Length: 165
Image (cartoon, rainbow, N blue to C red; front, side, top):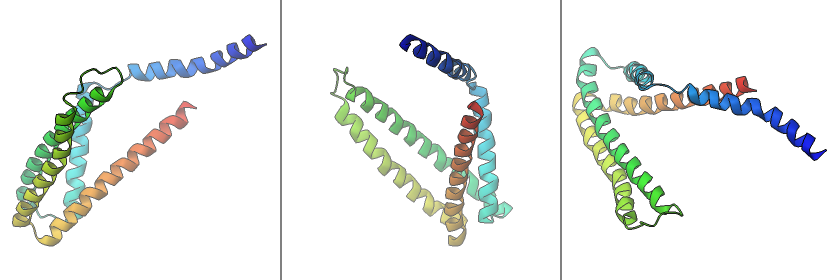
């Protein structure tokens, strides 16, 4: 009896395992991910430009500054990610080398300070090319876009899970 129940359960779960393996085989290539990033970036520029009400002249001055800031923040985020990865490795039960943990923790914490410094520096630079009102609108539009992307991602995942069932 028990063997029959286990066999039935395995047969019922087998299609889900195969489907999960199939999804892993359908991972995106680097080119596909890059194209997605470029599409999202274009949508972001259009959304923020519209929400902020940038004129052509303002946009020509603002976007190069913003792109510089984004590059610096991305570099800092990558450093944060590496230090976090190193901390996870050092804290793993099988790890024997915990000597770099203090350094990685310091690096991790400093990335937040560094990111804030970059944002403060560029805030001043933004105010040189945009009015205070437009800078405020920019910050709100950037957050609004980020929230919109997150909601779309969640909705996509929910719809994918519904299709799996």
